[in-house]
Amino acid sequence: MAICILVLEGEKTAYELWEKLKKNSTPITNFQLIEPSQNKTNAPPLANPTQSIDLPRKVKIKDVKLLNPKISKKDRQKSMSLWLMPFGFLAGLIFSGMTDLKTFSTFGFKQSLEPFIGAILGMISGWIGSFFAAGSVGSSQDDLKGIIQRNEQGFWLLLLETPLEIEVPWHLIKAINPIEIVPLDLI
Image (cartoon, rainbow, N blue to C red; front, top):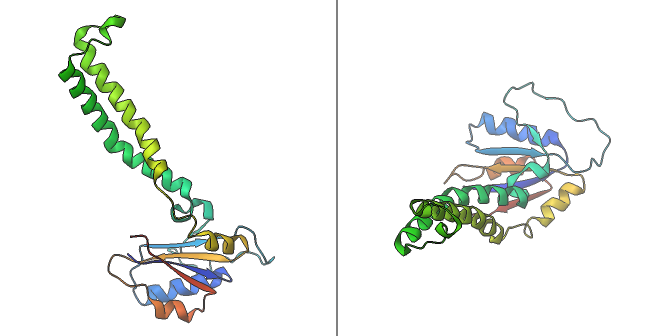
């Protein structure tokens, strides 16, 4: 999967690239036009220049998962909890059954509920562990500071992603003359 971010002067350039990509039948998995944080010109936003239904929508930089570590962390936590919670449940169940501890029966619970309570506590600890594990993974925010600064300066960003083993169409990108091309190596 090839990913690059283009820094553009205006949104019209992105629409021109979109039309060229469609005309050449270039497979694109992600085409997000990111609005500038502050508009450096007082020009009104372009209406849909081609009146095309499948024109990509504009997004804010805070809504792009690749450029917002908070969204990435939240997604990692959700996916980690999907396997840590069942693992914690099974670990708690097995540990309670193997040790034959009477921890909860001293508090008035039935002996038969000991493994189930241990399993529930194991599941809760897996859920808590998913928060810590998701937070411990470093983000590439330092690598993207320049791109984010360009957006804050009033430039449009275009996130372009192609499917696996398909190269980004560099000849089409260079034809629109972007201010900067930033290829990202995430895999």
